[in-house]
Amino acid sequence: MRTLSCLVMVVLAVVSFLEGNVALALVFGGIKALIVGFGYMELRGAARAHLLAYASGVAALTGVLLLVVRTT
Amino acid sequence: MWIIVALELTTFALAFVVLGRLRVDSAELFAAGQAHLEPRFGLLLTVVLLLSGWLVAEGVHAYRHEKLVRVRRLYLAGVALGAIFLGLKAYDYAAMARAGVGLGDDFGAAYFLATGFHALHVLGGLGMLLWVALRVGRKPFEDAETAVAGTALFWHMCDLAWLFLFPLFYVR
Image (cartoon, rainbow over all chains, first blue to last red; front, side, top):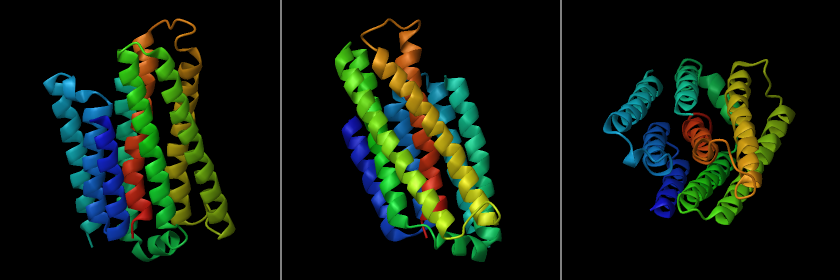
């Protein structure tokens, strides 16, 4: 599972590089942050409140960054 | 360790928002600065850090199964990749400086401060990982869980910060 997570994150990084779209890359960054949190930082087995706090923090950061970079 | 990680990530998050604004408000200046950055190099840095994070996560898994020699090997491999990351970053900084990008312009200041702050965390994380790797299975820790898993947590925080620095600086 951890190896698969790593592979998925590498693929997402490569797609970000190939696409050259910062909004897409930030969304992928958020997905990778969730994978790192749930898989590597062992949040998957943590209390639901901790898991929700982390997921909502990542989602909020990704959302704010998307709003910021799309503002013209 | 979670409190430290949460505080650090909050600091990084605020910096990311400022960087995002700079990217939009000074679009021409930012694009001119980005032209000195090689996206392939950013991808390489990302892959190196992701692999290092994976090795350290495997190390924690080995620790949970009391395979302490494997923990040492995995952490040392993670340290090696982390050191490669810092070496590549130093090369990148030198190339940027040669190209005339420095703290005197907005892009250079943002780039060197944000990635430099991150690199300092990587350096600190490397030191902690190395300390754990050299000690695990040889000398007892006062609090083994915090030493092994807590250090890994800090290292993953470095991963997390880079996952947003990469798109903000290198993707164009």
